[in-house]
Length: 345
Image (cartoon, rainbow, N blue to C red; front, side, top):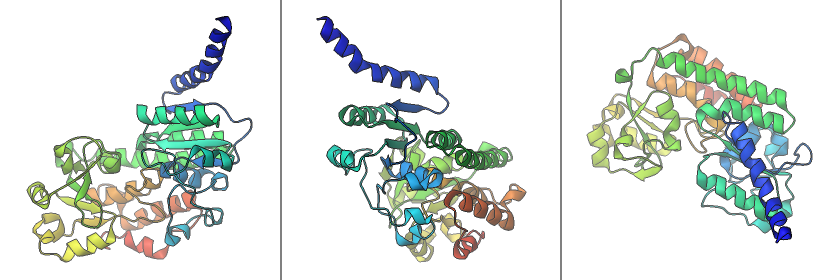
């Protein structure tokens, strides 16, 4: 009986350590399961937000991509990332890598970032228990990004890099606060985020997919349809909402809607407030919902609250986003992308 009790205690000890670390770092919301024996050199990104986080902080540590990355996107990333294989994802319902395959890759650490709910924490614990590979799950909502970047920088032995990125993230969050201080809630624009090739999918209230819009003071019209993740929207419902601004990341949809008589029944389309956000090297609003959204903050503020502060003037906006792009990805902002930042582009 005593032997069984000891075995149970040993089995529970790592979980107790993990819980203690979770409670010790509430501002960052980090779940640490196990600990690498040394500074991790081979890191498996459990999902796209974690991959983007690693690509920004320590690109040479990323074992491979959990998703396919387009050649155009790779061209805007450090050389170390351009030849990485697609290794699959371990996060969420769409996991595509087996635990056997994960073990064969011999990572020093599995890193996940983004949602921090019970499902993701339970999933992390299951992987750790079955593989004994150290696992860190880090909260990744927009306000979490500075702490997230600092934490990963320290974890991977590149604290100065993490600090530089964290300060840049804080500057974008501060700009949001500055702009919204000039815009009473009742005067902020209503916004529809059209996803997909037909623009008729959107994020409901609290969806991480529309977080950046709500964070920047857009009043998400789809919030009235409920809370949660993504949902289909009928065109009739969209006509009833008749938002002030329509946002998308799908250039094909944006071009179609701008010319289609049905879509031109909406004020936002007729009055040229249909805006297509950049998607390179990753989406500026979504896709994935990670640190790639940081350049999207000043861009979106300029679309939702034009002229609110001098930092949103075209030249200042290009300079700000260009510097941030260079810091994040080690590459200058392409000229075509810089041109697209102009308000009427």
